[in-house]
Length: 362
Image (cartoon, rainbow, N blue to C red; front, side):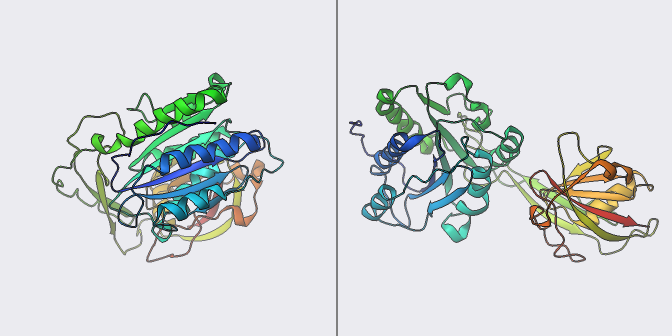
């Protein structure tokens, strides 16, 4: 298939991750075309350690980081590596897009794999499928939307109307999705996608000065103080400026709650759902700890006997009877570790739809 001869892209310093659909439903032909799309876009970028870095991830029911961002600093080596990516589908028909996003945020965009904190990130999904686990995908997508990342999707499918494109949507970006309903439409769709990617630089804005720090909340819990800044550029992207709009510092008060002394005992890892194991009280914090969660629950109701922590940030409170119908998961499913806590540095904080349940002894 003949692709357009694209002009050189104006991008000078970006980290770009291409995520290819390698599921059974794609097939060898479409998978190869996905690679051609990536090569056609990549060959027009200024690849170097200090310029544009490109990585490639392939997902089906498992996700593999085939090309880390810091693997190649030259055009020739990168193009050869993309060509050598093999199609290895498994027996799962639908791709696990949620897991692909998880690996993207946890591994592919990590500093150890070449992601630069002072450089804007661009993520491009190439797929023809639908997410089989929509709740999982929505959780992961909410995380990618909280990051300063420009996200694009190239959908190669005649069933475009059935695709859950809102999984990739950015609230202020109305044309993030490019569709090729037939293979013959792919060259034109690739050209449109490249144009969108190449215009990201002109859409970036500049930050104001940081505001003042908020006050710490007094008490016996772990809390945070914040300061924010504003981006001064109107454009179509959710995060038009490189970097974060908020900074956080942790306020840790090292005394126990005198009114409600307690200790904690780990119970196990449980399967959670949208109805929640502990539906009564809950809170969320980007730096959740066991002590923070326990103090929150006991401030809500001293009769709470249990708490549950999920996916690093969420805390739930319960009385105990809720566990009678709960399903135990394998302990390895609760694979998230709470952020640093001077009292309990290695406590588990659940996983994706997995809750680390803890008994409150008071």
